[in-house]
Image 1 (cartoon, rainbow, N blue to C red):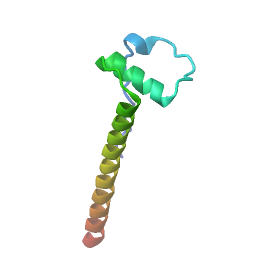
Image 2: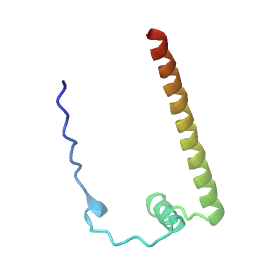
Image 3: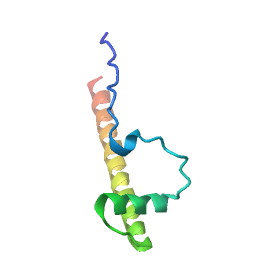
Length: 81
């Protein structure tokens, strides 16, 4: 039996080192702050809805592909028996 690997410890840098206060900001506020701080873009409410919808659609598509792949692998396994 293969020996289980110990997970690597990631080094925290910059802001990640600071202790975090309890987060009371809404999803919308956090998303707007992220885009402003990381990309220098102020998002309107409509922009935020569009970004959220696009990301949700993207992850739905990835999930669907994963399910299809799992079904294919399941079918291949049952054909091999």
